[in-house]
Length: 330
Image (cartoon, rainbow, N blue to C red; front, side, top):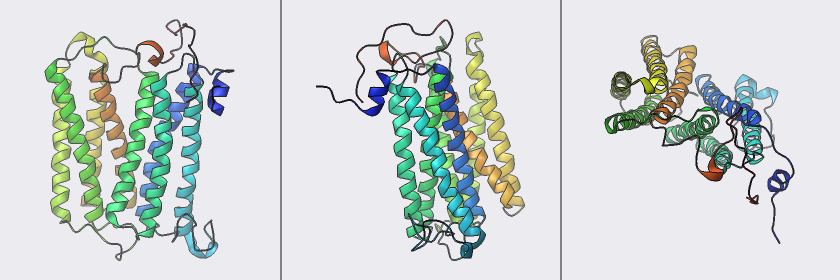
C-alpha cells in the first residue's frame, strides 16, 4: 500500500498551469530580496534588539507592546515578514508539485527554500539571544543570500529558454572566476558591516574587531575586480549565438557599477540610512545578477530543459505533452 502525502494526493487529482508556477517563483524571488532589505532596515534604525527575546518578543508577550516604542514595532514587523516569505515559498511548493509532467528538480528546490527560511528564522533568534553578535548577524545575512540563491535558481529554471549556446573553456573559466570573486565580495561586505561604526543598535553592540578602513579598502578592491571581470566576460561574448548571456553581463556590470557608486557615497557621507538601505538592495541585485550570468553563460550547468521527467513545463506549443508516469508520494 502506497503512503501518499497531501501534496501527492492533490497531484493525483489536479494540476496547475506553468503560468501559475512562473508567478509563484517570481513572488518568491521578490520576497527573498525584500527580506534582505527589511532586515537591513532593522539594523540601520537601531532596532536589532527591539524585541529582546525570541521566539517571543518579550519575556511574556508574543507581539511588540506600546511601551517598546518604534524599535519594537520595527523588529516585530520584520519578524512578521517571515510569514510573507513562507506563503510565497509555500505557493512555489504547491505549484511545482502540481505540474504535469512533474519536475523533480523544481520540487526539491522549492522545499529547499522552505528549510532555508526555517533555518534563517532560528539564526535570527540566536542573534537576539547573543545580543547581536556580529558574526551571527553576518551569518544571518548570508543565510538570506542562500535563500535568494534558491529563489533565483527556481525562477531561472521556469523562465529561461533552453539555449544552444556553447561557451568556450576560457569563457566558462572566466564566468567561474566572476562567481567566485562576487562570493568573496559579498562575504567581505559582511565583515565591513560587522567591523564598522554603523553597528545597528548602539555603541554597546560588539564589533568584529577588524580595522574598518582596511576591510573597506579590501571590499572596494574586490568590487573593482568584479567589475573588471564582468567587462572582460562581456568582451569575450562576441559570438552571434551569445546574445542572451552578453545582455545578461551588461545588466550585471551596470548593477555592479551602480553598487560601487552607492558604496563610495555612503562612506563619504558617513553612512546615511537611506544610502545604506540602497546598498543592501544593490547587494541582493548583484548576487542575483551574478547567478543569472553564470547560468546563461553556462546553459548546461542548470539547463531549463532536462531529460525525461526532469524537464519543466513551458507554455505555448513547446509544452510537454507526454503522459506523466506514476506519481511519487514525496
